[in-house]
Amino acid sequence: MKEKLLILILFLLLGGVFAESPDSLSFNLFPMALAVLISLSFAVIVFLISQLAQSPQLDAWAKTEMTEIFTTVLIAVILVGLIVSANILPTLTGLGENYEDLILNNIIKQRTNTIRTFDHLSHTNFILTRYSSFSYSKTSSIPVVDWLYTQFESRSQNFGLGPLVSKFNRSFDSLGQAIFILTAEKIILQYLLYAIPLFFFPLAIVLRALTFTKKFGNILLAFCIAGYFIFPLSVVFAGEIYNTLLPNEVLNSQLSTIFDTTKRIDPGNIPAQGIICSTIPASIAQLGQFGFIVSVCATLCAIIGWFTGGFYTCYVACKPIAEIIYYFAVPMFQYTYGAALSGFAVMEGATFDQTYDLIIKTILPLVTLQWLLAIVLPLISIILTIVSVKSISSALGADIHIYGLSRLI
Image 1 (cartoon, rainbow, N blue to C red):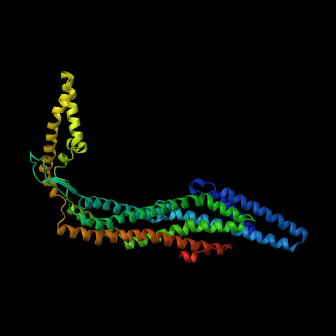
Image 2 (image 1 turned 90 degrees about the vertical axis):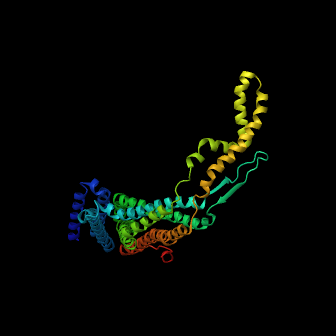
Image 3 (image 1 turned 30 degrees about the horizontal axis):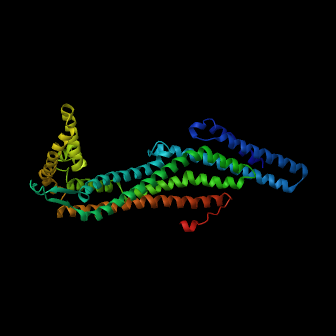
C-alpha cells in the first residue's frame, strides 16, 4: 500500500513537470491532477476510517480505489508520453514537422490528385461539348427580290455523340463525391487531433479518477485512444494502400494522356467568331423584323421630324425601305459566314475513335478507381476505429455495445 502511494506521488510530480509548458503540449493537466488528488484524499480518508472502525468492507473499498487511482495516473502518464512521442516521431523520421502533418499529408495528397483529375476532365468536357451541342442555321441561297424568299439549312453536327458525353459527365458527380468525402475526413481528423489532447483526454482522466463516473470515463478514454491513435494511423495505412494502387507515375501518365488527347481532338474556336458574335449582328437578330424596322425608322424619323415636323410621313416612307434592308441584310450575312460554320466541329471517324478510347479506356477507369478509393479507404479506417473502441473499452473495464456493428462491417 505504501509503495503504491509513493509511486503515485512520483507520477503526480511528473505531471507537474509536464504542466509547466501546457501550450507546447496542448494539454490541460491541472483538472486531471485535481481530480486525482480529490479521489486520493477521499480514498485515504475512507482507509483511515476503516482502520478506526475495523471495517473490512471499507478497507477493501479503499484499497480497490487506491489501485484504480494508481491505474488512472499510470494510464495518464503513458498516454501523455505516447502523445508527446507522436509529435516528435515525424520530425525524427523526416515525414513532417508534427504528428498532424504526418496524418494529414495522406489525405491532402489524395484530395489534391482528385482535384487535378477533376480539372483535366473539366477541360475535356468543354471540348467535347463543342462537338455534341454545336448546331447552326444558315442561308443556303441569295434572296430573290420579287418574292423575298430564301432557303435555310439547319443542322446539328454530332447529335449522336450526346449519350456518350452524358455518360462521361457522370464522372464529375463521382469525383465531386470523392472530394466531399476526403474534405470531410480531413476536417474530422483536424478536429480530433486538436480537441482530444486539449479537451477530451483530460476530461476522460477526470471522469475515470472520480468514483461515480469511472465507467463513463473509461468509455471516453477508449474513444480518445481510438480517435487520436487508431483512426489517424489507419488513415496513414490507407494512404499507403492508395500510393500502391495509384502511384504518382501512373496518375501523371493518365492525366498526360487525357491532356494530349483532348488537345488533338480540339476543333478550335468557331470561324469568324468575332464577327458572327459581335454586337450589331446579335442586336439585329434579337430585335427581329418588327423590332429592326421600328428601331431604325423611329430613330431616323425622330431626327428628321424634329426639323420637318412630318414624323408620320417619314415613318410610312421608311418602313418598306427598312423592311427590304432587313430581308437582304440578314440572309446575306448568314450566306457570307454560314459556310465556315458548316465545316466546324465535324467529328470524323479517327477523331471519334480517339474520343471513345479516351472516355472508355482512360477517363472512366481512372475516375472509378479514385471514387472507390475515396469511399473504401475511409470506410476501412472507420471500421477499424469502431472495433478498436469496443476492444479498448473492454480492456479498461467498461465494455460498450455498438449495435449494428456486424451489419456495418
